Each structure stands twice: as C-alpha cells, then as structure tokens.
Picture 1 (cartoon, protein in one colour):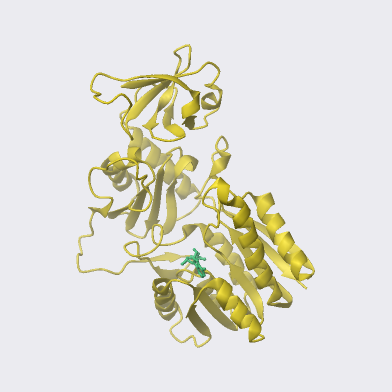
Picture 2: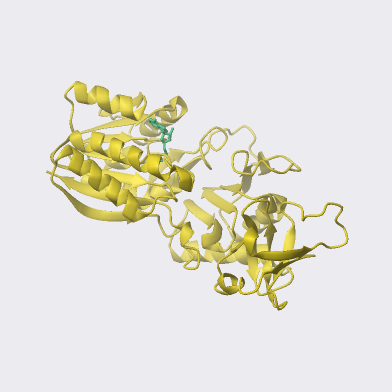
Length: 401
Ligand code: SAH
C-alpha cells in the first residue's frame, strides 16, 4: 500500500481522532509498486505514518486540501471485517435511539465513515458517496447494510451530484445496486412519527427527503393548534403535515420547485384526504413574502428552512445578509404573539453568526423578540466530538410581540 509520511508534529490531530490529513501536513508519499503516475490515485487506500514512522491509520486519498480521510486509526491495513463492523455499529446506535422506518444510518464523520451518507426509507437504503474512495467501496457498503439492517431489502445509489469532478469514475454514479423485486412499483413511501411521505430519490433533492428535521417538525406540531401557518421552503411538506396534524387553522406551503410542490400535494392528500385548509404555491421566497406583505397578509406561525446560503467559507458574508433579509421579511409578517421557526443548514455559518443575523433582522424590523428554543440536528446525525465541523443544522424558535 502507498505510504504517506507526515511532517514532524503533524500527527497530533490524528492522535486525537480528527479524521482529516491536510496536504500541507505531508512530508512525502512513497508509492507502492503498481503506480505508473507519480501521485496516488484519487480514492486509493493509503497508510499514514508520523515523521518517526509510527502508524497513524488508513484512509482514502483525495486530490485537494484534505488529502486523506482516515477510516481506521492506528492501523496499517483496513481490517477484513471493516464495513460490516462499522455499519453494524451505526445501526446499533439507531436501535438504541429507537429509530425505525425513516432515519439516517450513516452520517459521514459522525459515524467514523468520512464521505459516506446512508438514509433508510422503509425497505430501501439510499447511499450517497461524497468521495471517490467511498464510491469504489459501494458494493461492500451495500452488502454490509443488507447484512445488518433487517428492514432493508433494496439499495439505491445516488452520487451524481456529490462526487468530486476532478477524477474519472468507473461505474454508474446513480443506479440501483440492489433493485426491488417488484419492478412495477415506482412509488416509494416511508413514515415518520406516523405520517406518510412519498420519497422520490430518483428525481428529488439529496437522498429524497430531509431526515434531519424530524424532531423540529414534531415541535411545530405542538405549537400549531388554531394557527395560520406559513411553511416557507417546504420541499415535500414535512413541516406542513405536522402542522396539519397539530390542528392548524390554515397551512400555506411554498417552494420554488414545482416538483416539490407536486409532492407536497400528494403527501397532504394521502395523510389528510379531507383537508380543505392547505394551499401549496410554487414561488420564490423573497417574491412571495413581498407580495403577501403588499396584500396585507400576516401569519401566526412561520417556518423558514432555506437551502444552505453559504456552501463555502468565502460565501459567509453574503449568506449572513441573506439570512438577515429573509428573517426580517418573515418577522414583519408575524402577528403579535406569533412564532417564527428559523433555520440554517450552512455548515460554514456557526450558531453564533446565525443568531447574530436573526438578531439584526429583529432589530431592523423593530419587534420585541424572545428565544423560546434553540434547535439542532437530531441524534441520527451525530457530531463526532473530535470533528466539530460535523455540526451544521441550527434553528431558533422565536416569540414575536
Ligand atoms: N423544510 C424542508 C426542507 C427544505 S430544503 C423539509 O422539511 O423537508 C430547501 C428547499 O428550498 C428546497 O426544496 C428548494 O427547492 C427550496 N428553495 C430553494 N431556493 C428557493 C427560493 N428562492 N424560494 C423558495 N424556495 C426555494
């Protein structure tokens, strides 16, 4: 196997189980005999050593500033049973949490599997690889899931949008790895806290559903009774269904994607066939809020769950302006005594920065605002304590006078 030797004193973070080796920490690379090029292949397994040749771990090589993502610490080879053991451990944790039907089985570094996401929807697991290394092991990962997670019968692989473009990739990036036996069935459903959702990983965003809002949706249900609710950035209507079950007077669901709005309507019809108090609108959030404000409309409860405004560190400033703008527009439209659920899923924007953006929005509008809850990602999206970068979802529930 190719060996990666670090510069002196660069082993400290690996000894504390932080799984990334930055390219600047590397003194030299000793390629194994089979190499023709003068660098390791993207996705290749490499063994990492300190300057004094102490084994630090084995991981996937990557082209870029993160050069190696460690899979197993303190070893020179990947243990033979590695995938089985890791997937088993991830599943045992979800069993302990009492999760079934819809949940995240693997959350990258949070489950000591950097570059890998696996979401479970009833009988189907959807795998998403964020590194070529994980892509190369997709069949072993699929086998380990089938062996360890009794509810899973089918495996879909969806990595078209997530693999780096720098290297050519063998094999398909999006396909069934283990197809369902009933090939006629093109509709897949899964349930969350007793509500049914149609999950469309073929056409939908991410793995087909946002598993990370389960608990925050349940909190909306608690506050929804008799309220006029606006669910902005609704995607397939997660928060809307909980608000309807919580006894909301009306629910308006808004998303810029027509495909998302079609799914919201399908999900509402399935769970609340007699509901006449739900409206779904395809619109841009900023335009919709401006138009509603001009029409003099207000709401008792607004949910704002936008896509990541900052995908990279250099976009933080603009992102914070975006969060301030959208939150100011929402706070303006909340009736006195109303509630705002506001979220950011930008990893690059930490919770203090997000809170400051929401503070600026409240101050701009001049309303009295108090924080009722501070929200975060759920337990099946664990944060490895040695890898704080894994914390991404944050939310505030505000009481607006
Ligand atoms: N709250 C959702 C997840 C939201 S994901 C849930 O619980 O499942 C973010 C959503 O914002 C996506 O569905 C995307 O289509 C939508 N979106 C992106 N830009 C938008 C815009 N400018 N206006 C309205 N919706 C937008």
